[in-house]
Image (cartoon, rainbow, N blue to C red; front, side, top):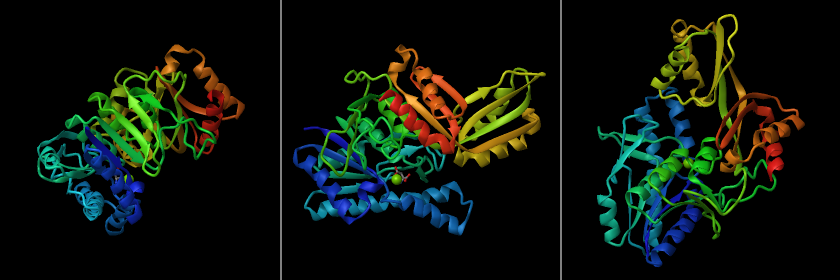
Amino acid sequence: MGLIVQKFGGSSVADRECIFRVAERIAERYRAGDQVVAVVSAQGDTTDELLQKAREINEKPSKREMDVLLSTGEQITISLLAMALEKLGYPVISLTGWQLPVLTDRNNGKAKIKSVDPQRLLSELDQNKIVIAAGFQGVNGNHDITTIGRGGSDTSAVALAAVLSADVCEIYTDVDGVYTADPRIVENPVKLRDISYEEMLELASAGANVLHNRAVEMAQKYNVNLEVKSSFQHMAGTTVKEVSLLEKMVIRGVARDNDVARVSAVGLPDEPGRAYKLFHLLAQKNIDVHIILQSIGGNGTKDISFVVSKENLDETLEILQSNRDYIGAREFKFREDVAKVSVVGAGMASNPGVASKIFEALYEEQININMVSTSEIKVSLIVGEEDSEKAVRAIHSKFF
Ligand code: ASP
Ligand code: MG
């Protein structure tokens, strides 16, 4: 008997049939004597539909009102799932983000969770109730509704698991675990039995759409046992934990992220402080920058290129253009039809030749590399978007 947090994503609660399947999953654990908190996402494409609805009214709504709207998606799911469990005869209560409460900062649209008050949760569990909690949403110090970023329900689940010291946080989704590559791109990817937090974090930030990267970060920080499982089939999934010793693989996965754009500041004076001027402007607006590349200067100037997500491209260019004199660039260039391909594995650190194998795979497919960045456990490449799937397949087959 223990305390478990289960998280069900949008596709797992998409319709009536799915909701009852999930209710049954929860009930099974409850019958076995566990205390269960289930965190859920909005049904199916609800969040996208809400975004679309908003756009029909106002192309630039305030982030505050957007959060009021988006949070309704998860509120629908918690009530319906609670009703399903009521129907099956189980004691249950649904709780929104502000009822829990999940306290966040004021950064609407991508708020960070500051704390979760466990009082209400614990008292409901003490009364033998199943708790159904809304993911993705919280409340700020001003009692305003916030959301924590797309795909954020994973992070909500980990936050609750952390504050409750849950035995495990199970992430149920439409895939049955973490694979060495996206099965939609690669024919026979290998399912991983386990993976370390570090590797999972790199894969998640690299665009493997299984887990929200902040969820992995938080799980590592608070030592939450994470398990990725299928909500449709009963089978072992992938465990994310501190160290993984079971499988001796040099690399754990190849991921692709199409949601990137390359930006270049061309003709900067080759002197100290230019990079600072550029990147602190972006940091002030909370814009995440990935790969950064500085070219060797010539004629007293240098170029700096970097990668942002596509949704931040317009804002990035606006910031740069309106601060051109301050930054001192001759011009700014960008390219949208690029993709990031990342190869992740803790075994890289101790196995020479990984990068050369990756480059060989790309050379054989005549794929041109735009940018490269490496860390102890990751190699990321920027390639043309049209080459990205071919690149993933070529690299994957070199290693598996
Ligand atoms: N419903 C939100 C989204 O679609 C949060 C989530 O699903 O995790 O991004
Ligand atoms: Mg979703």
